[in-house]
Image (cartoon, rainbow, N blue to C red):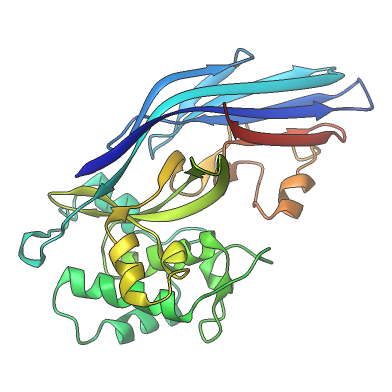
Length: 308
């Protein structure tokens, strides 16, 4: 059920300054897509991409290449109708997709940042051992994470295999990653979504990441363990952030391990993102929010996002 739909005009700016004009800057931008509670009415960008491609998770990525630049300013304008929504899940009417489907295989596998380690498998089974239904299992791991995780930023190393399961600490991405991994251990399709939360009254936009689970016949369902942990009691957190999008969110990226095409040359610089806490390799990036870049020589980078 969708409700409280609002129109938003969002502007994102990224600037690149380079001291040495003999430089090449490669930039990747993800374009937000329309789905259940997000309707993109218009997306415009100041520069024409050299190419674009879609990945296996449906993300549309624009690639730019700037040769011998002095200063570049990329501006993105988005007109979107964003809505909140709530799904009333019922135990006897919740099913998983067939195991033979691409969706099931893609979103129950172990992968980088969502490693199904023996320790996580054992903990997941322990948490859900008395549960019979899918919903009971989901609520058990939701409650476990909300009770036991402590917010901490920055994160030293991304990926659930680096978590201390007896002393859980991390930001929204790590909250989400552990929930997703535990769902996948239980063979419940799950993925991350990355974007921004909009607070219209304060005219504020903040970065955020949260979880999706796929349940038939409902489709993708929002779960936000990190925001739930901010509530005074776990019952209120469950009510507001389990199977409910309780805030205005704009989603840029579905899933992790977004492919980078063309590959980044090994001699190019990627240190900005690694210092920032976003793992970027020559062939992939953990997520796009909404931009990453790499350059032949050093550049100064700044970005901002606001409501207009």
